[in-house]
Image 1 (cartoon, rainbow, N blue to C red):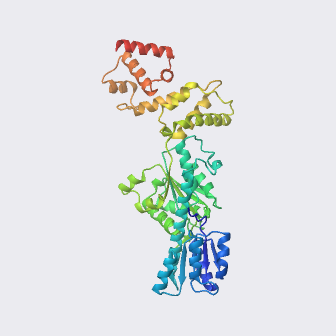
Image 2: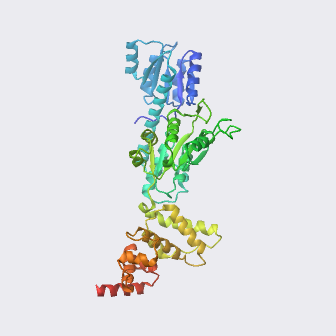
Image 3: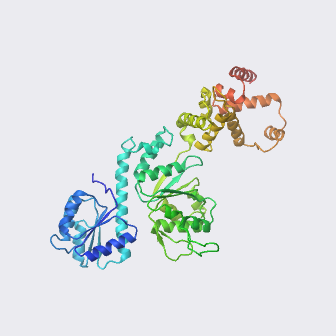
Length: 473
């Protein structure tokens, strides 16, 4: 297997120092910062023996060792490093010879600036993609995480989550944007933080919640403004994207972004540049962009509420966080963690968990996911006095949610009206008793211990009711 390129640096090889300087300046102005130069072709192979490069830009006509000789030797010893040939000769035979020898592209001097930048950027992207595929293969063959400490704040024992962590370790080093999706309360910001730490970028993580921002407020918050750009703009403002320089810009609630703002973000992702309000001069940004949403962007695209070109630019790397109901093996660990956390916050002795509590929680769908479980446990611990943690507040939440989800029942109606609507008339006490017992057993999935807790009666009393109902059935 060929080794993957381990960085995104560029090596420029030319015997003319002014061409090296101009090419380096051009690339750096386009946001490609790691650029090395070499004006002696004899030093290239010793340099490659010491370090790796994402791409080599090579002049053909140089003293000592010609570019064509170097090209063939690089292709033989370092076939994983793509080489772009840049020369003043536009002879077709020479171009064909170079391509056969392994050149990735052939550029004729004087090279158009846009053509030069585009060729280098595309080659670096190819190198990055190959590197990710290489690392992904290694991670898929291994169950181990390279940086388990980064994921320590995310409490889980789920195999699904471990697979996601391994994927994140691969894509975090890419400069491509990352899309994080998942329901409300699954912890998307924690995943964004983990991606930033794994990226080892020198800049900081800057988080922006874009929900409810109109286009002007979005632009001002993110891109800033010039002095006098609008009434009240007495001084320039840099915007949060400047704070994320060299780091990660995390946009939460991204699915709520207005269309005009989507266009501006697309330009930032494609060109790496943006315009502060009131400025005609673009600014460069090297911030890595991570976005998160609980919306279904594909459905929004079908309704023309989200731009497809932006979606496909974003979903190069997609991290989907499964809801808590799909990884219930995490509930025991989260329960213990939140009980300890709440006890510390309320300065109480940690309570003892009721043996039935886990079984009760396992019957619940958790529409609010981990955040809802945390709120449940914190509320229960706040009410807790001593000994075993009371299940009353948790039972009330679960029963109330169950009533909301029951077809034909409007929880906002008075009790009498709700009963009439459900039964078609006002029911007898026996009918309500039968319904409650049946609903509790369904919710508890047949577990009498949980059902009796939900009903607020002893297990023996529930058992007697079940026998009576079976006898009358």
